[in-house]
Image 1 (cartoon, rainbow, N blue to C red):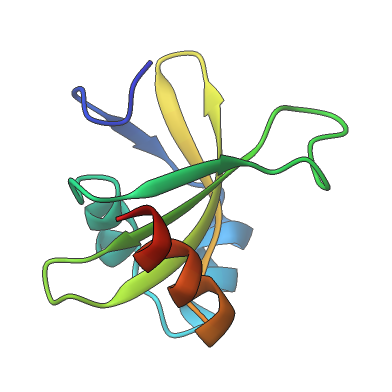
Image 2 (cartoon, rainbow, N blue to C red):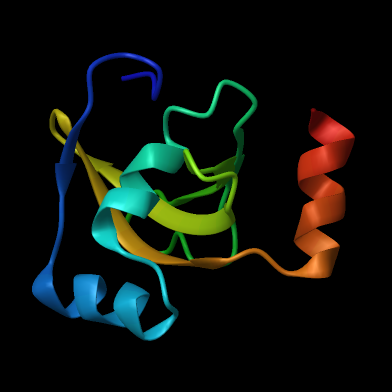
Length: 96
């Protein structure tokens, strides 16, 4: 599945709350997947039980987010989302 195709999102309630603690709403996290300049990396440090990915992308309001996710069948399961830090901004800008 490519993240620019039709996407169905899946949330675990604990993960939804974790993202809210970081000040990121569910809808905002999902918007970043439609950023045409998004950057996706494989999360090699946390992919022990399942393959995980890191997405750096912008919301409709141009908020840059750092999102950890995995694929589950036909869905994207968001594990966590937070605002991007300065070091990660450089990674996003370098790739775009």
